[in-house]
Length: 300
Image (cartoon, rainbow, N blue to C red; front, top):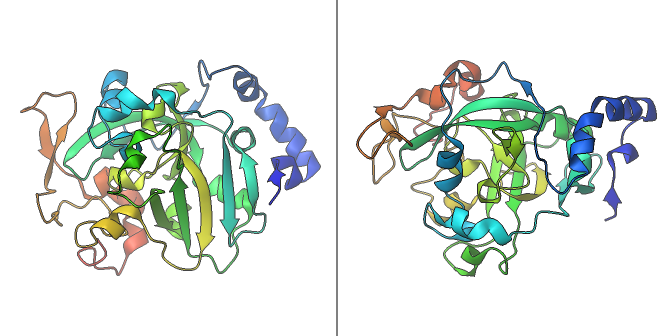
């Protein structure tokens, strides 16, 4: 499978026009790091106050670097993120291995301030920088028979010490139904707080699905596959009675070992900031229609 550029799959006039539009972003990409990412504000952003950069980058789950919340910040520094490419395959018209720079050049970046809810009953508000996944899927051409999108994380145990553990069958896998993946709230994030994505948060590119629990937002993506069957997902493979495929934030369906009815806002102190969990993490008006007719206690 040869490495492709977007110019290989885009009509030349449109390609040249896009090159002009993204010239500023491309210039930033030429340096050793994205010192500052220019992105338009998004109509999809919440008006909630974001957590601090320190909160967001020092307390998270990224099991490839360990099971502790502080492990990603402690151990992700050695991850090599340049060069980076993404395999896009399965039921698409233009499968191939795409350089990350070409993926970014083809998409308008936005800043989206999203609520972020973890299944362990803690939450944050994060100012992501990213682009709609639907735009990327449209570019590669989704075949009519496709019903799901599967994702895989990098496997590199020499740089990701958590992968020495047999606890998880690597690579980390996640998936969405196609209509979820094409929803405008679903983004591929490449940064936060106007900076390039920190390694502990999923550099250089990750998924963000704000109405689902955080483990659905897979990090450091190296493969996107379109399929006609529901793909296996890591936590559903590990504990299917606790972690369903859909994993929508739902205060009415408890985890077997704890309640999901409330959450603790990170940065508010150990005993402060507890608040009621919102259905679909506060995005009910936007996404409830995706699940019309489904029993969300069964499709959890």
